[in-house]
Amino acid sequence: MIILALITLIGTLAIGILSVNRILIMERGSESVLRVSIEEDYDENIKNQVDNAISMLDAVYAGYENGDYSYEEAETQRRHT
Image 1 (cartoon, rainbow, N blue to C red):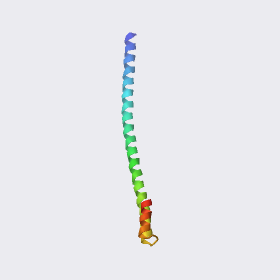
Image 2 (cartoon, rainbow, N blue to C red):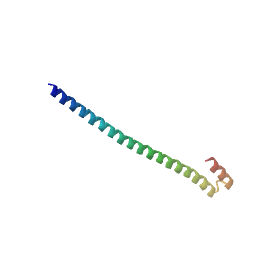
Image 3 (cartoon, one colour):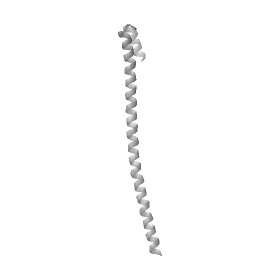
């Protein structure tokens, strides 16, 4: 009876240890995926902000080229963009 209880206890401990090990491995993997996702989102956000700034400046420059703005007006628009 004692031997059976010891075998059950050892088996339960082994399963518990393996489960904790798997959980830690999965946690590290999900942390890595989350970090990559956050970095990609950050990079995409920066790219979009730069693209927006370029678009606004292009619009001011196009207005200058079309004669909608004088050079001084375009400079003022650029500074406020």
